[in-house]
Length: 265
Image 1 (cartoon, rainbow, N blue to C red):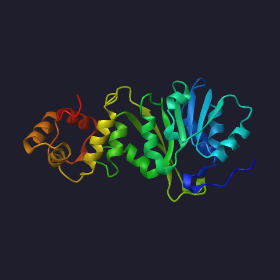
Image 2: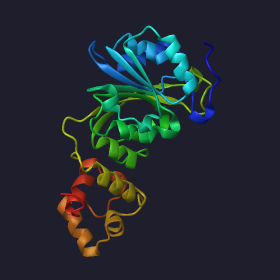
Image 3: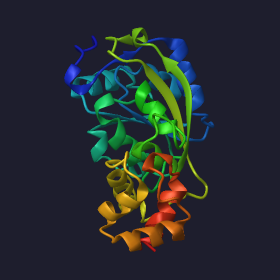
Image 4: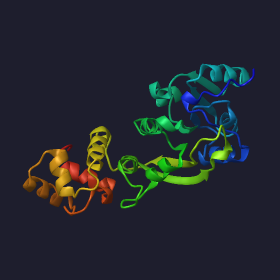
């Protein structure tokens, strides 16, 4: 079966360099008994590299034509399960049937939803994702950096992020208009934010960063609806200087502030 035409509406940019594909598969650091869930296998280039390293691969693909191609290509491979679905509609833990690692060339337009899906319980053992370079920089940025924002805080609250290497646009077919990077996201053994608090924490952080140029005394008054005195007291309880801005606070400081404001207990 010939590969079907590329569908730009699905953000399809196929990585074809075997050396880069091998580096991505190696970065997942699979053991011979692990299952890996692959997001958007496309024509199966990364799938091949993952099958060489994992006990089992569960590939989730939305494009029916590519699903048919993969099923024909891997008809005799019992270790590969192909699921035709939108990855955002799939419970990754259930699809894997237990503990799993995550890998994939993520469509740029749904990077953030996919990332947070992987960070929900049960979390992937580790995720190695090919994303837009600017998104990778934001995920890994430390407090105070130009790229630091709500995405940085919300990811780092539950996981450690490593930017592994960059990939030029020319390595893809068709080439995207931006460069890409591979990141590895590993859940923290002791997350800053406990299970069950992730969603209110995420909303609080995103709302605070909508006022990223304001001082925290103003941010707390606006976001939490507190008086000037209440805002100052909560900031003092959390050990935060009221003159600083949201872009300087760590995930732990945001969590402490939310507790001081009794947004969670």
